[in-house]
Image (cartoon, rainbow, N blue to C red; front, side, top):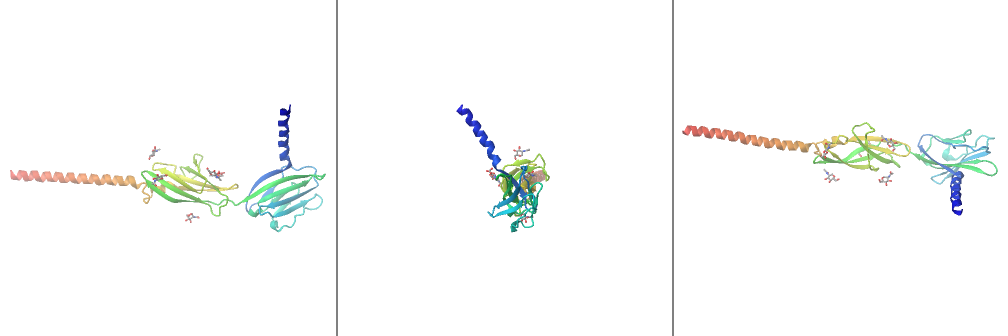
Length: 267
Ligand SMILES: *[C@@H]1O[C@H](CO)[C@@H](O)[C@H](O)[C@H]1NC(C)=O
Ligand SMILES: *[C@@H]1O[C@H](CO)[C@@H](O)[C@H](O)[C@H]1NC(C)=O
Ligand SMILES: *[C@@H]1O[C@H](CO)[C@@H](O)[C@H](O)[C@H]1NC(C)=O
Ligand SMILES: *[C@@H]1O[C@H](CO)[C@@H](O)[C@H](O)[C@H]1NC(C)=O
Ligand SMILES: *[C@@H]1O[C@H](CO)[C@@H](O)[C@H](O)[C@H]1NC(C)=O
């Protein structure tokens, strides 16, 4: 009996806990607009307050509203002329949002009897990722293989993750192969006969991404790295050998001819 009752009590606690405080994750793009909106509004309510604790630890009361008077948009210098309160949905809009606006935003709704309904928004503001610059740091070719070091960098990057893939064309396709690695540097070895030699770097953060592509084969094929020139030099060697053999043959034939003529003259 005891054993059967305990799990149900534990279950009840689990269900009750999240009800006390909802926290929503919001990822926003810097210099754009963000709107913080509670999923459902409690009824009835008598007053609300929006407040924030920024990541810098500064705290502000942003709005108070009691249905009767017009909303009081505080006067915090941090948000001056950037916040709008929508009374019908109780939502808070920040436009344009700045990276320094990242923090924990709280909507307190007074539901009477000294009780409050609390909704929290964990807001993180990211820069939009700009086009990465994919460059080849080094390329060494030898025996039909080419070792390449690729470097992907994003101007002004902050909290950016790199993803790499390989494909057969400049244009991304579903058939591209995803490669392991999430760093800005990638080391690859390609064979002389590879056809999927377009390497793509995808720089992303939680709100945006952009990509750049490089054709690695053309670098390996350039004379400096010797990727294509090693078979060519083999051909050259073969050609030189053939010339030497031909030369020797011609000399031998001429010699034989002269010798036989001399022999005939002597006879
Ligand atoms: C890309 O990176 C290379 C090497 O780091 C640099 O020379 C080049 O100027 C960069 N290009 C752009 C558009 O940033
Ligand atoms: C390529 O790298 C491998 C090790 O990853 C090394 O054994 C090989 O010698 C390198 N080849 C060239 C041409 O640099
Ligand atoms: C990058 O890859 C390493 C190892 O594969 C992993 O431990 C790490 O969490 C990854 N980092 C990101 C930001 O994905
Ligand atoms: C490419 O060449 C490598 C050796 O250089 C060989 O192992 C591989 O099978 C070849 N692949 C194709 C598709 O020809
Ligand atoms: C780049 O990465 C992002 C985030 O992982 C993904 O949503 C997007 O589809 C990727 N783009 C390409 C072209 O692979």
